[in-house]
Image 1 (cartoon, helix red, strand yellow):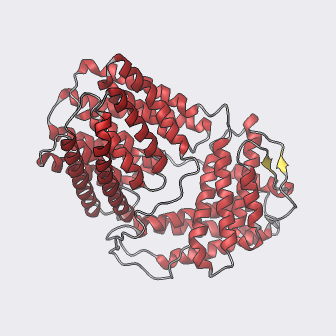
Image 2 (tube, helix red, strand yellow; image 1 turned 180 degrees about the vertical axis):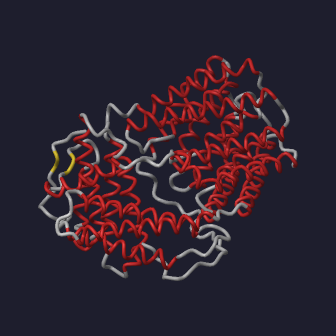
Image 3 (cartoon, one colour; image 1 turned 180 degrees about the horizontal axis):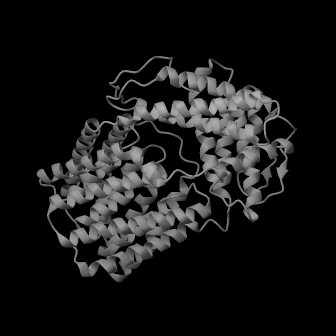
Length: 564
């Protein structure tokens, strides 16, 4: 799975490149869903406040409304829980910020509290894998609230506004459920099938290592599909749909393990059939399906990793966030800028899984924000013609931000920046030139100081996690090899071992990639990683051959009598 040649280690200094940082990607398949949801969640509260002449309260309703950006890739049962937790988390961060703002106006204290909140939000969002937009929206709201004059008596009313808007955002997020109740899981399964088909089609056109990125992308898509399906109920009316989709995901896994025996067009046909609300394709291998689903049951029986164990490895990232946000805010204060939370939020938005990705995000953030400042200069005269136009401009930019951000982060920031600047004018118009200058300076300061903090706080645990991932992959391979040596392994045992090995190899690749992007990290055991991946994939292919499962068995694309 790795494209690197075996070596005993890597240089402790990583090269930070600009290549491809600003390159545009294909838009997300569901780019319009978060974009429309955002507008649907933000528009009614803002328009109601406009009608009441209290647009100055929009910051509190937007805290709840922006929760509609989350969990669009999750099945609706899981989405309901996730959105509820996001709303509670948003209100909790807002409450801490408002109480702090009511107790002190010391800017240094406010920046410190904002930095600590940002670190907690970053760690929890990464540990729970809540998905985009991650901690950035939470940090933006809590940091901005810290610098709004507040009294203790006002806090309950402001939190009630946020909670009411949060309930509306929850309803907006769940609104598609009656129309396409199985949409997210069908989409995740189709993505896994297409990714496996892409690898199978490329296999044989060159050296195996040349196709390592496609294989890694395929396993990542398969793992995402499993996470989606395993969040569904195991009994009831939806169980039949889930089992039908599980069989297709297994076929994608088999295709990745044995690409030479795979018909990519059949995988693509299955993926295409999952679009819309048609019947779910059948794989046509009932005995194999039974064994495979026993393997799925084994995964269901596995205990989830406790939250505290998931938070632990994120300590260096949380430390980077706290230090970088605090220093960025202090630097902004030293320059005399009245909104240090802009610099704080810029720093909070930078931190990714490793320093290389953090560098890329810093470049994207600066380019997008500076371009957004110029866009604000063009929009401001129109928005200042009336508060109704101000609200409509914000809604249009809100839609644009979510529609474009999947192409590249900097492109979405071009819309986010003027939207944030216009929101500050809900309480009253301000000098355009001053806003532009302050935002540009805070962007540069936040990105520079935030990135320097990431350089200073090294993640020395990354190398240890690579060692652990290699060991886990070796153990999973040995377990599968022992079962292959048995003439008649227990029903489902070999399938569970094969799937466990696939998970271990996926985790190994993700861990190795993350550690390789760190700064001044210790030399990584690249030779062990490459050997573990090669031997693991050979064992996967042997397991597929042993089970005599062929993805091209059968003719045509039959359908399961399971409707969404």
